[in-house]
Length: 215
Image (cartoon, rainbow, N blue to C red; front, side):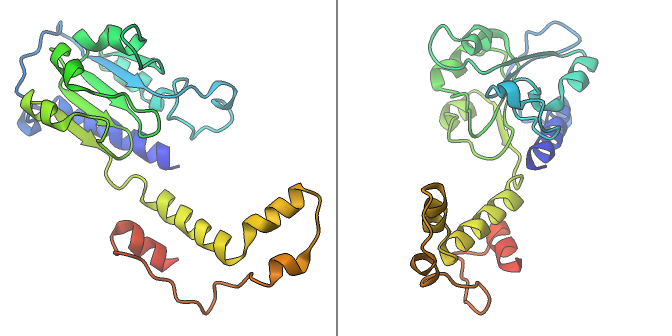
């Protein structure tokens, strides 16, 4: 569900990017009337794309926003090919208006690419993070660099709870016993504990830390 929330937030970000009253864009556009060229860079899911209706952050599902974008007159191109001078992304750099990417398959927006991207308005991470973007070059070019802040809060908090339980319950050695066909209960149980009654601390208590402490 996290990626579905990301997709919904990305849609809102794209919709608001066309509103000049809320935009900080300074570049002149050279697009033909009626739409923008939007390029999404995602990983390929192959046979897994159809196994989960919420699995939208892949090339095949394209964040689930293709129908909406095309109904608005935009041209939406999706690829996983993002590296090297002859990649698919590079072909679209000169005339794209919006670039959408994800944290785990990022399209690197370098100063060189920004210089080539004369029409680029918005670089949107469908998730969190901007370390794949040259922020200095983006600011100098008047680009909007956006993310879906908070979209991974539940996912990360649950992941950290899982890690705590894996350590407290001594899960990994037990798992390796099972896959190796072994059975040594004492070798696992002597240092396996319940979380109940333990003191759990976090370094900081932001959105993720607070949610973890509520668990």
